[in-house]
Length: 430
Image (tube, rainbow, N blue to C red; front, side, top):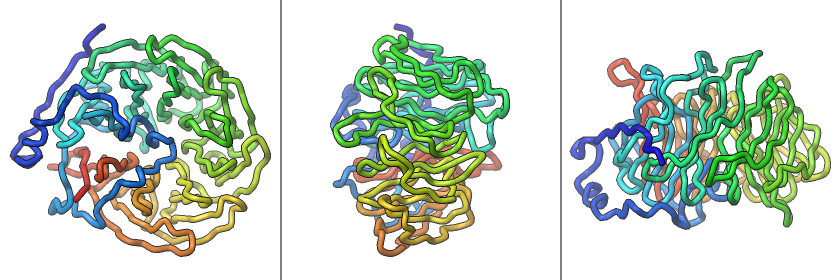
């Protein structure tokens, strides 16, 4: 095994975490890397962006006075990846463009203390990406033994597996990735299913496809060609009826794949060419929003037909399905609630001036939403009426989706510090 180049950054205890937190850190078992109460990948353990039903978060918090802010850890560089939480650690990715690096960052789960930062790639960064993207947008994934990260690197999609202690297990060039029409970068998060990691690499070129690698070796197990077309959606695992499916939208379809072989289970003509959001599901209905060039929200019955659609665009952010209803935080700052059975609009309300990249989160019967300007909104998950519970400024920029676990919420935010953008990961809790 090769040990990845590590850069340790120690945060001052007196500045960033309290003496009580430091004491708790001393009694934390850092060698434990697996647990039942983890958040092992994009959209959580069930893939639905629901926090565990027992998870509680404060009714309010204050970014400036640190009320109900348990810790606040600076993160070097920039990234839009959502953190994962496994065992005693939090992992997220970042890119320091001035140093031409893409890295994996490890924090202590309890205290937020920065434990280590491992450089995965040095050089090879994409020269041009969309202003709303970053060089570290895909979230990591954990297979029970290895943390798997995916970066756009040297005109290719490259996957790397490391142990929780930072030892490289394997690195695989998944596919060429040289978009011709638009230089938007890359953003699809990897999906772990059993002993496979499934990676979407869709672009207007010959290697456009859905790839499955063995998590132990990084060797390709199967590959399914996808349309030569720019698409940015992340695959997700859903169980619909008694059938497990990997769902992926875009290229004018919503498609379900058999996880172990990649064989198509069903495909329905719906959506548009480019989708960024991840599919959600409710019973046998699958819903997604996007896109480009056509905009809208589409609901299909699994293996059947289009059930309903509308013209609301939630492009970079995913939807949230909850008990027969689906919520969408549209690009223009309007939140919607639709009934999944027929698409009936239950209510809508404006929440600010627009600009949305983070996906809604369900925690403790509430919807947590964030806009790109750093404002977070807490809304009752009630299809009968709109009820805004809190509107709280939390930094000056939020692109990554929040995560709720351990009775706290992890939020990746940023603020201007002496004229320079500084990212943080903060923990909100009682």
